[in-house]
Length: 417
Image 1 (cartoon, one colour):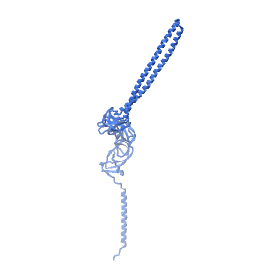
Image 2 (tube, helix red, strand yellow):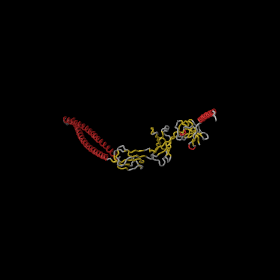
Image 3 (spheres, rainbow, N blue to C red):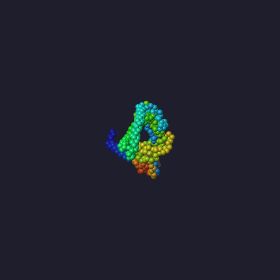
């Protein structure tokens, strides 16, 4: 009968414990070594990124914005009086002149007022004529009376002079001389009174005729206004151009001030560009602009900058100096590029997807050999449409990735395959 040895079992337990300790130690060493390893750089297909080379030289700063062609001469045609639209004679798109009748309104009350004003004017003219004839007749009577007194005075004065001479010669009694002298003095006084009365009569005639003339002028102005208002019921274009919009329909009742139509001159256009507010700070009046109409390029210059910001953009007016290409018309969508300035001897590269002027950004620089790219911090300067100035972080000749690398924000290095 075999007897088990206690020493053999103990040895196996010791060996087992040693193996366990060695395994745990090896696992700890492996874990520590792996933790010290850098994570593997992500791989990127080289043909999926957009690289560029940092250059030094002249950089043209530009800003770009979308916009439309807008007529410089636009006339909104309002209703000057209340009325009903009877007929629309011209439709949008038609070429018109200043005298072209676009539509006709009707207003029976206005026409009645015009007839009444004309009737009142004619009555006032007739009354003025009647008054003038009556006053002239009265003036003639006054003049005749004055003439009679003047003749009597002259006769009496002459008789008094004759009697004075005869009395000196003793040919007539002294009483007769005195009587003729008194009569002459009396008629002299009456003559002065008649002359004053005649002057007053003339002034009275002028005053009465002036009052009636003022009444006539007032009614004449009123009648002219009524005739003008009736004439304005035939609504005219006012300028040569193209009818862009007809804003009413036949049978519609309109009130004074209602916009009826819009006429524009298609041969005098300007461009209205909408520039992002962050890019508009360096725009100045007179800067050259290139406007692309998709059918041709037009040269121009900045003529006005809107002081207000609307929906994140600033409106910039461009006066077009070049010849308009075929197909250029109001409301045509255009793309405008404004030249801000030319920077000489600066370090620049293509504009990256992310990064604003004056900011610091992280960008991948392609290492020599083109197999890897490392992230570097770059401080940007002034920017343009397609390029940006580099202030720090890169040097001339460096190759960088401009395309979107946000998916590798957690990596400082990528491999290019």
